[in-house]
Image (cartoon, rainbow, N blue to C red; front, side, top):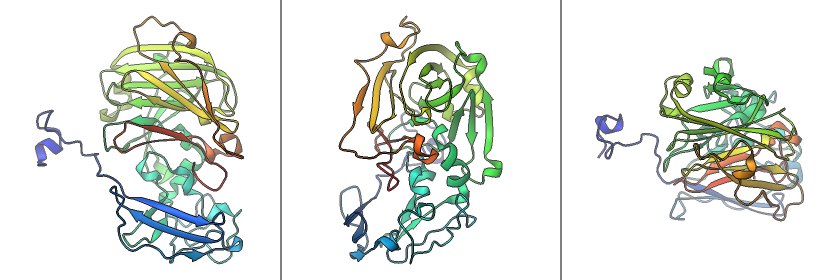
Length: 356
């Protein structure tokens, strides 16, 4: 039973309730025939695969009405402008499939962050696309790749948004971009090697309080990489200020490598509970992944050869065209987890049609 003491952390550690924990999610299933240009159907299910609310009837589409507007789809933005395009109510009668600015902008922000979900849906299946406070246009769309990939307890998604660019860690407000920065900390003094300037991917594990970041020579295709590993006695998500995390570091290490990637903004970093870290990114028409031992105090040296498990692996699937940060800032590689946070996923758009 929830009480004020255990909700606010005042109860015993065994009985404390994490206020961030969510119930099992609903999910939507989209079905179409003819590449989205013919018959479309959308239904909402609970975690037991039971349909909730009334399903949509099958409807027709056409190439001159690509986005359609199933059962009065209400597309809107907070200030009637999403990346300089008025989408307070998009034209649902003559939308061309290549006019993606009106209907696809928020879709690319589908990752583990709650604010990034690109639609909401009523129990009756009415779907609405959102762009709250221009988050997609002024932050997400251009530099959303700087968000930290979080590994959290079961049922939790990030409730604070930390972003890492160059050598500055920021906490951002999910809202109007005019007052987005809540806090920022320049951590250069804690780096054991400052050869590479540009942070290209960052991950954090709340259980072991490990923060791992990749720095490269630029934010495009430079192959030189320095991986920084920080461990602290303070949980980043519970610190009042970012500085508190770095002031209480218990271990710091780094190692270097030469990693080929189309674009450094595609790098994702997933920190495991056991100190092993997965690095994944878009490369060509494939997704590339490798795991490295980032545990500190093992004398593994400062090169990646002693830390890598096996080798880099490429997963190409059956793709014909796939997009990454090279094709546009919004196409950067995304990270997400299952509800129980035991599985992580990295993905990139197959084309400009969808998120992964």
